[in-house]
Image: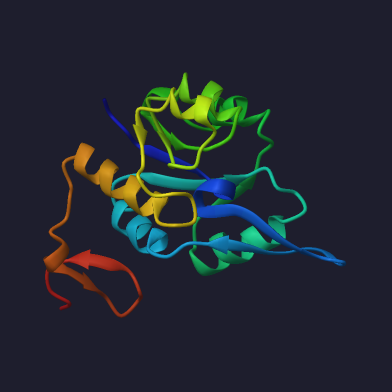
Length: 174
């Protein structure tokens, strides 16, 4: 299997899937720790993109994913995901991480499918790998580490260094 792409559904995977509402509407989403760091470790090996179908909370997601994490983000309905992936990526070279009912359809067509522990129970049955961690609680970090192992690039955690630009690297900080 040759993987070149990793597509991550944001809501319920990179987040806990919970929303805070006020009388003004959707106010906040819960993003977990460690996911960004692990994505940076995977970034040299795979093209990483994020998708969300949450129109009303898209500004919140954009702030975290595009502005803070510096990853591409696309607004893609849960019903249009498979077509969108097909139009933009080679399915045979794509790993996808999702949690919803309709993600099982995507799982059936991509090269590798990952679900967080809190994914819909029927969807998890179609995943190649199910994380022990829940969405928003390190599931993406665990998935990244799993993909690094699959690709033969698992880093030695004691050898990791961070450069002054905020990116992870291997070896010395020269």
